[in-house]
Length: 76
Figure 1 (cartoon, rainbow, N blue to C red):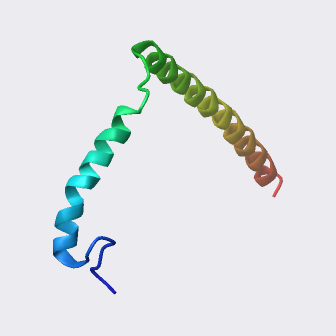
Figure 2: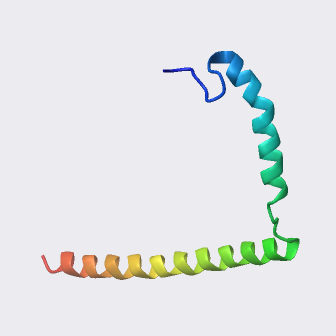
Figure 3: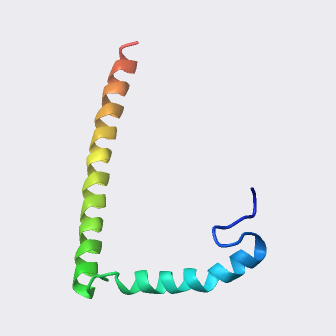
């Protein structure tokens, strides 16, 4: 049955369930443990370090494959 909800169905059921849903969202949001500013900064720094390291790794790998390909093509 399309359009039916658990508490009566139809548009009226949706209207009745909306305030309950909002209250549940507020209750769950209050349980969230937000990171501190220091934790956020440390995570951001780690992301920057890791993306830089991976970028350099893939640059080296790409350069090695490029050199190998150029060498093999020069043999032809």
